Image 1 (cartoon, rainbow, N blue to C red):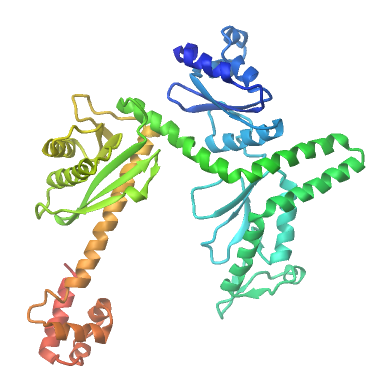
Image 2: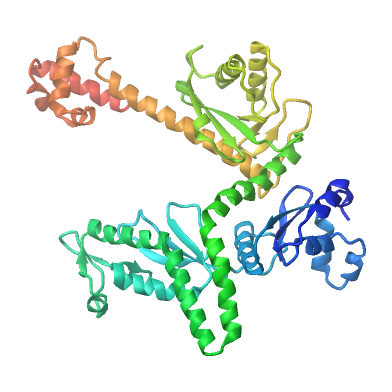
Length: 495
């Protein structure tokens, strides 16, 4: 039995549990959710896991015994009924996929409707997994047969495509949706422009957005029909589902918002805390990255994660001011000093953890920055990309975590986002510099002639593609000057 399970804090939490239905989340010593269960009475059910003699009673059920021995803490969510607890349990299991749950992990209970608006002709398909992509998801829906019937009805009502179609593009750019009898059965024009079809998709999405009321009405009608046939057990089951869906579907967005904040990020934050040796999970983390091309266009990025997720309002990017050239260490020292000097001046708190993209040299530069501004550094680590090694600023040995470690994965996401943000800024600067200076740097080309070139060709890229003869046609340019400009542009393209 874990020591944490016998603490006064655990006993106090057990004492305060309500005699109400709900869902409980069992956690291990790192705060990871390892089991989700539902209960008619949270107080009785959760307390049963902490009975001292129970593990001995389960010696013939090793999986359950191992689960109980790993429990170090728990959380609960109170609901209004057992059916709602069932629905919420399934939703949480599918979101967290705890190690010791077997029910629901095949996602057989709930379906989602998925629409990818980036497709040329978005289709409405069913899925049991909500991915982190650009698609729109509707649901979850607990009554799969009713959902499939509703989608079939929506196909006729709105003229949308489901997953069983392969539209063909016509020579005029429109699409033929069906090549069989369905073109006549569904009653919509079979040849359609993509924009017109998208209008159908928007109507169908609006319908799904407000579908819960119509959905519940149909369930109620089926419940009444079952009761009229004296199928009282089935009618009672539908009644419970109706009551649960009334609450669950209405609260889907709230649950998603609240639970996304707690879900894998909470586990990962605690894993970072444990691995790095922090006093608390790092709710606010900042990461620095330096980007340059052979010492030119040297820039730096700062990204900020709050509760394990990007907080883009607190992203910052820096151009290097103190020197010209290729020196990652000096660049790191400069931007770290500028960042935290400003926070000091504004009397704002430092983050819980600073992550430096790099090894001991970059860490030393960051420490030097804090010394320069006269401020004690917050907890700080380096993340060396070659072997994903964590470097500490003190005497601790470098740390290599398993590549599946949730804390390391969070640090990688933070570092990769800083790298992406720095590279984007670098590319923007290079593009801007090329556009602004390619003619400015040509010797002897005055403002009027430069303006004439840009006015004639409209863009630098069109000017680059122009021949000497085409440049010579611009007012103020003879064959000799045109040839020189053409050669200059060709040379600057290759540098």
